[in-house]
Amino acid sequence: MMLYDAVVIGAGPAGITAALYLVRSGVSVARVENAAPGGQILSTAEIENYPGFPKSIKGWELADLFDAHLASYPVERVRGQVLSMEQTEGRTFLLHLAEDKTLEAKSVVACTGAHHRKLGAPGEDAFSGKGVSYCAVCDGNFYRGRDVAVVGGGNSALEEALYLSRIVNKVYLIHRRDAFRGAMIYQNKVREAENIELVTGSVVDEIRGGTAGVDSVAVRRLDSGETRVLPVEGVFIYVGMEPVSGYLPEGVNRDAAGFVLTDAEMCTNIPGIFAAGDIRAKRCRQVSSAVGDGATAATAASSYLEQWNA
Image (cartoon, rainbow, N blue to C red; front, side, top):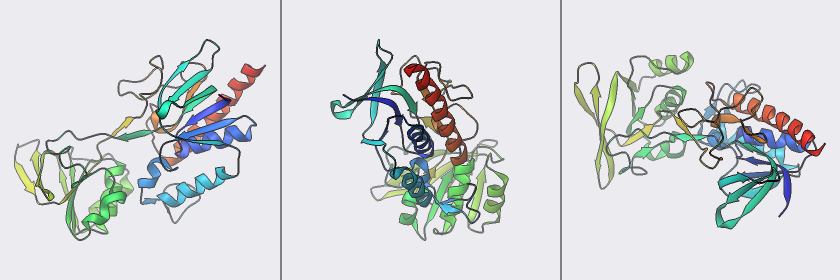
């Protein structure tokens, strides 16, 4: 079994950047990914705030550019999912993948990001894939010309509501608070869109439907208790994220939601384990911050490896 200087887990913006910086520093690198490179940007229609692209860029296009930048470097690309990892008495880390595959590394950079949190409403699981979705870019075209609902009040919910408004008949934007959390530029665009109806101060009580899929959503105002049934065929849910961090050793410090705690250099409390991108406990989860995290983590890992090899 080959001993790598560093294994980067994940091939989103943070992981690709970390692998790029590490391999350019002259160390041996393996990158593990169980899906297409790009991470969450693959499910983002337009990225308008990444520096260098003033006219915006499609998520998949940026993902392709990131991956192409790394393509010419000698990074070992491993397809699979890390299920668990442990530290040996020799201070190396053993990463256990599916199908009994194991990698060994002197350092690990965790860049597996986060996934969408479920709403928890009755009907959500029953109609998952049959009207309930967590990715408008992936599934929006199935509802072209129809009525849909978007649940959430952050940037993701507002961005996806705007995306859907260009292809569906009507969007009901449901948010439990009266004010949105998303950036003001998106709030303004949402309010200006003629086919987006704001359903604020309300929660989803139930997602309803039949054998053909979703046909309506029952919502309830929090102040009055008044209920309303919205006739929709699709429900797109954006109510927060959960970290993909379960494979890390139990000793790695996390916050109450499971996001990994690091210092400013992306170091965890366990020497040799670094974390970058959306898996970290932080306020800003954007492509630009993920790239910065990846570069910082790689630099810290390089310094760690210099001490290892000294």
